[in-house]
Image 1 (cartoon, helix red, strand yellow):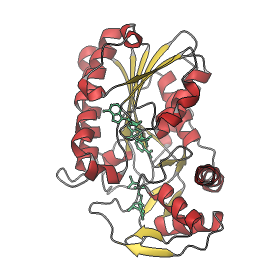
Image 2 (cartoon, helix red, strand yellow):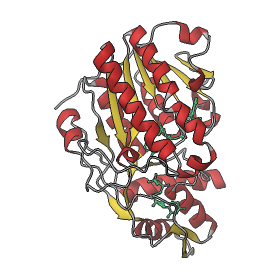
Image 3 (cartoon, helix red, strand yellow):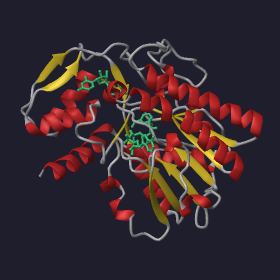
Length: 324
Ligand code: NAD
Ligand code: UDP
């Protein structure tokens, strides 16, 4: 299936969380297409340096605000939007303990505020959902038809259940208000602009390997993830945005590996003398994760192209540059 570009010059796009890791790459692509982009971010986990290169661009505006409080009065938000991309949310498991209520709010009330605005504007609404919607999955690989295995009161529930609520809200506005909606379920993504200290495996392992410190693998390290380079993910999200598909559609890669293998790969690519150390694993940590990409291939023509070796090398170079 070939998807034609639908959003380009003359289109106004609102990106919540646009100063974050994944969203800032998405914003770069939208600006590159000639779209007018408004980023709404409160910098709870994002960084100004991710968008600093855009601040003088005429078709870019940054609005600093908490989207969970609704859309603030601001001239850049007064005019109609053609598309609204709800990307805002802390996403690292370490944030689940530090920012539980903030995560619940941005995945619930903020989603409702944005869906109301999409309904009023007749805008396409795209929700950044997650493979965490599948919880600790009992089906492998995970297809979009799988309903998941989530502990509703566990430490991860603030994120998993908020995203599941956001998905339900998105479908409700589609069915009852006719909003043009799309849901992407994003699998583990990595690349430049991740925070070295954000607690996720790849930035943590790279920072430790570059400093020659022990690599902290949780548990036995046999748990798996399928890792996706950010450029592949952004291409998938844009294909979904341009299409008329509602999803949910999985986006990621089938490069599944154990966390022990990931640690060893990073040690080798960094040419590091670090050793692996095994530390306590958090509760409810999913045992395995790999997307079934059949739907993404069929309806979007999506195909990831970056191998873990190439993607990790690029990410390591970025981290090296920042540490220098
Ligand atoms: P990130 O933390 O780098 O980006 C999130 C951005 O949202 C940050 O800039 C943050 O400041 C902003 N934000 C958070 N709460 C906000 C609020 N209330 N108001 C305004 N701005 C707010 O995280 P990321 O990894 O780039 O994730 C981006 C999106 O993709 C998130 O919705 C996340 O759930 C989703 N996702 C990411 C991954 C991944 O592997 N990176 C996987 C699944 C889903
Ligand atoms: N992990 C690890 N060491 C770390 C950070 C994470 O072994 O320092 C493990 C974590 O327990 C999980 C996997 O790596 O099994 C992926 O964790 P991450 O936080 O990157 O993403 P998640 O898939 O949990 O959202």
